[in-house]
Image (cartoon, rainbow, N blue to C red; front, top):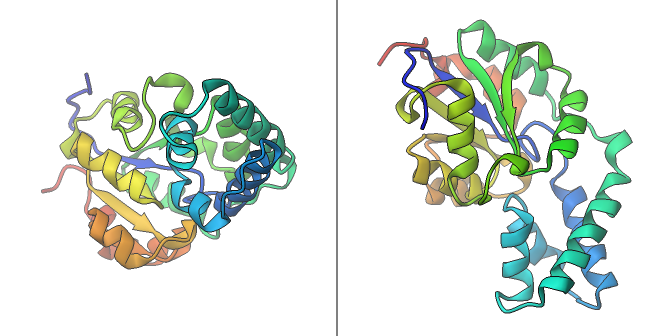
Length: 229
């Protein structure tokens, strides 16, 4: 159960929102699927990035796929994607955005569909752990996005109720998870989706990337001082 504290929290997705990884994941899944004899266009793979790997493979392989095949593809993806770990780069303004939110009194919590070891690598890439109050990953929940579990887990880390939080993410799966958890979602285009796709999914505001949100922070939903209506 989420807490009922009087503070406010901003919850951040990480892949594609703070770190420029969306297309790296797309290529890694594409190669992993090819190794399994599956030829899936990158355009289709890209549309699934942001879901948990189980739900992603349900989409790409069909819900009646062989679990052993899915396990092999997932393992191959992890191996292929790990090759990029030393070179992961934050999106422009990512660390500064986290610090600006913290300076305004928001509790900053990360909520990632990645496994814990991947999240640790991305946190080092962002370089703003000094203002991150907590984090949750797919290791901490039973169901991945678009299920609300990660958002609910992040709320628990922050100790606030849904109406005291705002989420920032880059995919329609982030928006769907937030809607189910009762948390408003700000979208960023750095994951490669269009503004209209995010708005149609239910995002309340959309920005180009973390730097754009930072530049317009005072005019955004996050510009409101914690505790005000």
